Image (cartoon, rainbow, N blue to C red; front, side, top):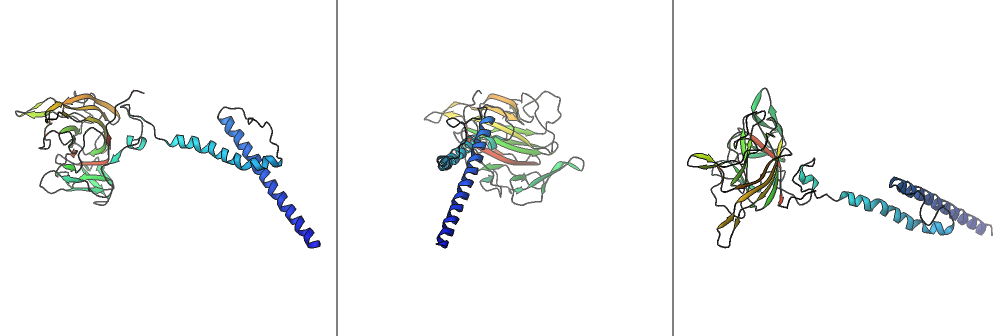
Length: 327
């Protein structure tokens, strides 16, 4: 008899403790919901229940209210995690591959797989982790730190002179984002389809009018031993040597009919240099100087010039061309 009474008392105490715990949790839950409503500019009073009445029915509702509370937090968080659509031809802080969907890297962070040397000479491009530039002791050189190791940055050899580097993959209409560093007086180029060059050049500090040889230019063609055409940058957006710089390029490939005859020229729809607009709707009626010896086509590889002085590249990303929108 006494044992039964003890068991009954213990069960009663357990039930009371459990109910009290559930009531406390419920009170905390309603307090949290009120706080969220205030943050969102709503009345702190919860609809359909103006007071917290901790009767047994409220306790039974606690589980459903907890689920509701979690959803109130998770759904806005999920919305915040969606990447925005920003393709308006402008810069938006971090590189676009960090902000928008659809970008694919052309460097694997380990080696130069996916790329090959253009010519038959030795390909000295290699990967590293960091690039050293010495303003006073070696302004015309770039060094690899800690040397030739797996990394996300590529350098055009120990002396800054090697073959051009070409992607194995071919591209048509494309958006290209690339970061580069050059030493003082150095020179390189980013060739869309291996044929149409956006000039990489040390134009920092130049007060002269921009030409088709300056950084950010669409380089000129070379016909009858002279430069023809091209498009100088609309402004000098170059940073000093030894600093990372960027191009964001919107490129439309040339068009061809069923018989292979070109019907429309290639076009640089827009180019940003270090986040600033420098080229808009520039048609290129043929390959620029020092292009690959290949015919114009709907798809061709991307080429990085490697034989004109020290240059390093990193964060090379592409995605299919999208129409620039007005926001």
